[in-house]
Image (cartoon, rainbow, N blue to C red; front, side):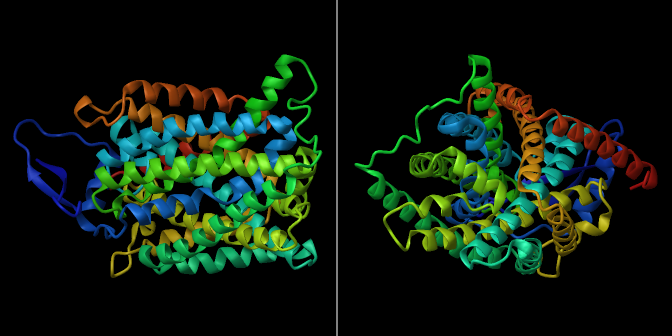
Length: 471
């Protein structure tokens, strides 16, 4: 009998896979493990081309987008000025999840994220559920980013919203083409996008503070919405669940684990750096935007043309502020969309390797730099979701799905042996409890849809096993 061994080459962190003879009784593998062994021994691995800076920029490109430019407006409509508390709560939950994602990726640095961790540390059904929910949740987030990009661009050009969906579809097509070009090209485009976005947000904060200091604004009063304590807490926790999705781009670093150099060092550093920077940015931007125009206007803008920060910038005494914010928003949405297509294609690649999806999606190009079939499939699926055209609906469903996904991430982290653990076990328990708790504050209809789709996914997995029993 033979066993699969994945080893890490010292120095550059490059992994390689070998088969070694195993003495003793035969090793029994289920269908999914047989498929994975077959795929890993017959197909080449993706090239490791990202260092700490590149991985951090990928994380920032994934996070700084719809979360700060759109979801702050959506969450403000639910919790009022107390959305600032929701941002902080979401940041705490994201930190726990980020630390657990970091140590999982450091111990198991392959493409697929929690899909692979679920298989490795839990069981095939939970692993599949994680991958399935990631595909659904992040495809919805990608559609939200594409619609957000289109909304900001049309608003900046003062054009009709009739072009909202066609422009969003065009963005999906163009960035799918960029991702097919490989991780190196994607990283270069992403770095340029993130640089413009961060500059625009810094300009927004500085000009907003300068314009509002000394003015008589009461947009932070009352801080909490009207209602009893239970209603106030429900609004804050609901907003926290929505804002949590805005932080989850750090998971893209883990999802790209097969393409990161020295993963045990690079991934934790990149994730922690990304989260600290993002928390500071979100809280300052949220404070300035609510102080400027109030939560009601932000909410109406988010659910209308998806351009709440630009509306806030128009109240500043800086004529160029709306233009700068619009440019930053446009690049931010493109950055998120780019990184989501990257991450989604890598999860689909991993599912193809394990025969949970048709094996064709596991094909790499000749250079081993991109799973081109998986990229095309995910680009097409995101384009279909764009046709829904509803930012609130896509974001709320994404909130439920991603909370379940990260609950499984934390559950997997609890199984890491002590010798491989980078952070205390209580961090995983805290992250698990927080994800499950916040998930209950998402609207019931999205729970029902999410649970139904999990059932559909498990039926799909069983069907794939029956179709390819000898894979």
